[in-house]
Image (tube, rainbow, N blue to C red; front, side, top):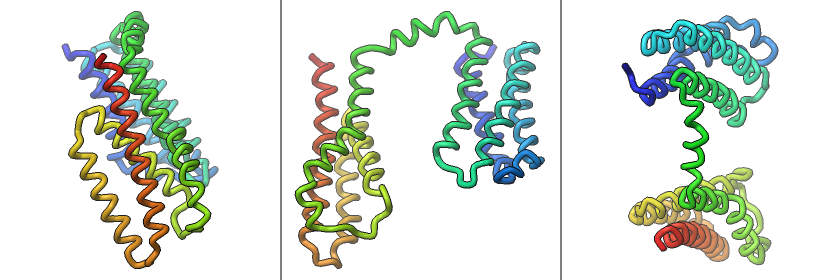
Length: 244
């Protein structure tokens, strides 16, 4: 018999394959016409048949397979139509519609494997000081760190003025940058941090070399060093507190 982890991974793989490898999702009409779009119903049917086949073959539980297939097909129909009804599809709608599907797959997997009674013990085991400190570090490294860096750089921000950068582009770059650095510190991959700093320095040099603007260059350098320093400090703090 296929083990539980393989079953869950197969279900998730099937969901991704039906939704992203088949061209059905891209052909769903946008707006109010989504409910009249045949690819919408074909997508929901594909999700249902996928779940029915996997549960039926790997577990031979017809009742579970049918209930899971009907539920996931209906959920995919509703979430896909809801997402298509928005004039502009955003990352939030994309994440939400697939989060619903993934949670339903997880729920039926837990039911089929009779793992619901073990879930509280598993969650309690994950709530260790190490895991909680890592979660806290990731939370702090995003918005609180961004606010702190912005406050520290505020005296120089008015001097350099505004530029033609993307709206909130710098903030997202900072989030990704600090998240990567914290991850590299926790994994002990200091070479990757050096590579990231070098790559960003090269990109910023190409951006600023033609401006003859020393103030902007120093401002960018300050922001980069503050971002790196805070992320490294948080990573080291997690390691040091857990090693004692």
